[in-house]
Image (cartoon, rainbow, N blue to C red):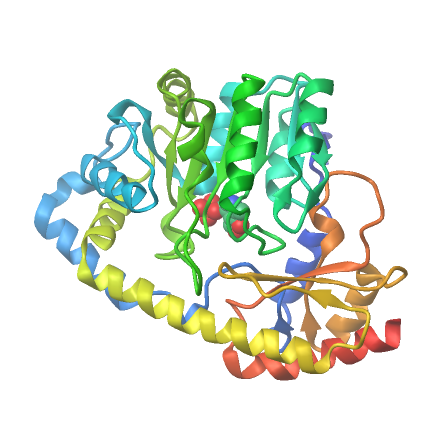
Length: 394
Ligand SMILES: Cc1ncc(COP(=O)(O)O)c(C=O)c1O
């Protein structure tokens, strides 16, 4: 076969262990998988989307199948503004954008911001695919020490003094992978630091609506509106396959992003955006969200209870207030990466925490358990198997 030249970006993100796990899981439907951060298949709203599809064709006719504005479909931009208002985020018409999923937003923003050798600062651990995205642009990704409440302000100050960073990438709410949420005072501190250093923060907030208890703190963007890119998505609440994301960013950055997007995918599907607009504006959409919260909340309780009962001493975790993930830290010497193969053979899967770090330090004693995608009745059985394997491995 002819040798095809690869870009340096492609070389920087060669597929890794996570890709191997998902490939293995695709062939093993019998496995109780805590590995996948996807919605519960039983809660994907097929009938609702089918009804909304009929509604949008009835309302807009075939125009909804046409090319549209790169910035976004008007009715969805209006609904997005309403959604953001419920999160305390105000945005001007020239700062709002509909992207092809949250991932599409991150990609386009990175194209507009990053040059090879730029530095991107991330909390530790962080969302693995974002690290891939940054590296694909030739950026160096630097992990900044974090604690149970997110990135540590003093450590961020230090990193910003040391590196001329292109931006800081943070997940302040129901973080993937740890589930942690940054409290309001920490958000204010981080915003002050970002503004003080005249840099930019990208706030990835795709789990905001999956809150099972407590009161939502204001989004980080509300404390530093001129220094923030705020990304959210309907993948976790409507359907990932529709690929609809919502982004707020400074208007001059949005102008660059729109110019770039014309060369990437021209626009996000008008048809999918129209369905998303109907979903956000309808009572049926609100009822669907309420159902998700009810079911996922019960699953989280089942998982937390199972982990509490089955895991051996020396393993630590904190149940989150929302999202899809519970993070487990084993004792030093416990090797989650090494355990995964055995776990798969025994019919249970998880993601080793080491997949979520940008640095080379040893984080092999951690694992991420996703609960949304696992059938509720399988959770206790799966955790019992996993916990027994962890006990054997320590
Ligand atoms: C933190 C985070 N950001 C972004 C995404 C991607 O979302 P989307 O499906 O909207 O591209 C995910 C998906 O798992 C995620 O966990």
